[in-house]
Length: 251
Image (cartoon, rainbow, N blue to C red; front, side):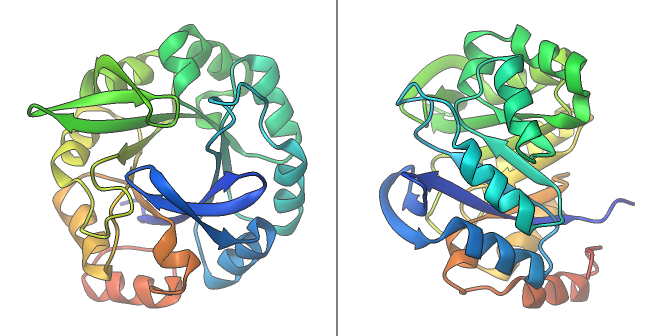
């Protein structure tokens, strides 16, 4: 059985790491390079870097900052934000990313998933899905959570897999930053529907929340930001806790 992964996320705005609640109310969380180095030392399994305003500001990803971080880490590195073409993906991978995360561009032009997968392999393509519970349905949002779409999270995840995505990064906007726990229902539904790894994101506040998402869904990994950035839950302690719950993690 594959070991579950613990993944810190660096949400980047104006070159700094930030964190908010429900995608708004951003506050500074520190220097991205220093945080990345710390996470490697603490035993993070992977690192995710999301340039959260690149798409809205209609600009490319911060490749210079990606290069600086990539030089300092030796764990798998996923980068997203402002990736709209194979050329954009190539620039990010050339800067040191192992995987590229695409969200808005994939909804607007689904063929980009297939094109990037054909060029670099499915293992390089992460389909990021920001989803919000509305009238009992988990709808997909784009433009950094600003724009609703008619898509349903499970349907879109299946479409992304069919087009060549190798992983799903599933973020519940309702749970994001609340520290009330992951959205177990939609995470369970998506991870049961697809045959590729699903990374659960949004809502982690306690070590038990990680245990819950691994025990009650088929999520392969759990991602969090502020609880790691501000030292509320040290990664080594979290992994020891999960091991005590008979959840297989890399120590």
